[in-house]
Length: 362
Ligand code: UD1
Image (tube, rainbow, N blue to C red; front, side, top):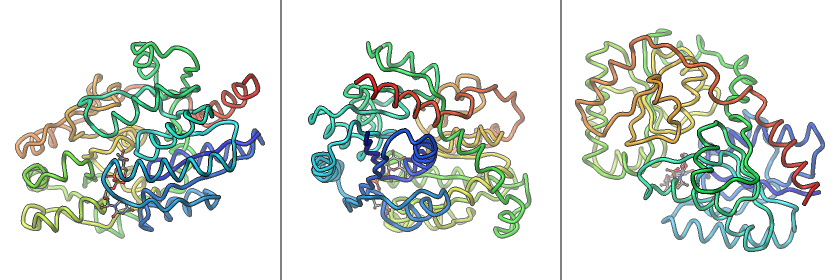
């Protein structure tokens, strides 16, 4: 049997690494890898393939950036062609990007079963592009692999009951697998920071970085946090954020921050492991901070990872200079780390077993 796996953006490469390995190890199926090309810069794409040992994609669709409609349409049309040519037994899609939605629609209309990894995540506002992508993808998927019990109950609330499995988070598997390769002391030295005495921040959400006032107020809040905490903040920049900062002339607002180029998985996780805390609007990093035993300030109106905010480990933060500075100090306080929320570290193996069983029955 042949299964097509579709990736395109940074967080999907991280998830594919483990599922790809597990599928090959178990010889469960012929795994055909398709890269949509949504992320194309070397720092956003190639570095992940290299460090995580993902084989080169069998297809690269080269869709690049654009408006949501243009990207989704380009990916849909290109993926559909591959699906028709390859006629796989199923299509695997990950998370909530435009690439995910394009693949899901393309496959569903060809009656090819869709397997959604990281199904059932829900958050406000419902107008967020990622929320639209994940809701629609879940509703056309046949096998829905969830990271948490909350995700399973979110699906049940929408009457999605069959094909739903709680498998845990493949990003947790990856963290456990890769942590022996983290080099926190060396990476701290390379960035001139003292272990335990710095924070790591990332920003890339459209609602945070595409509006000049929002972006400025977050950067000012982070700069104040540097002054109030006496800790440097390292801010590796997503290309979208770098472009916006130049366009909006934000240099003055970010003068207290240590701006860095986008980073690969190993460097970022090495830093997070030795950081005092994390500030982010990335879904993945909110959980990765928790895996590393670090708290995260989440600059979003809501999060899909409510398990971590409901218990107070992570804190949500509005787009407001004072809130970023004040809650940023709060996140540095010790808290009781909640126990295993995202599975047993074997999510990729569970996914491969479940999919192989489902396909055998189909
Ligand atoms: C996308 C996902 C988001 C995920 C994020 C991880 C959607 C709707 N969103 O957001 O869920 O958290 O990836 O990074 O799919 N750009 C480059 N080089 C690249 C990629 C992007 O310069 O390699 C710039 C372009 O200006 C582009 C912008 O970043 O227009 C945004 O890229 P896009 O893929 O649309 O969304 P992300 O913000 O990366």
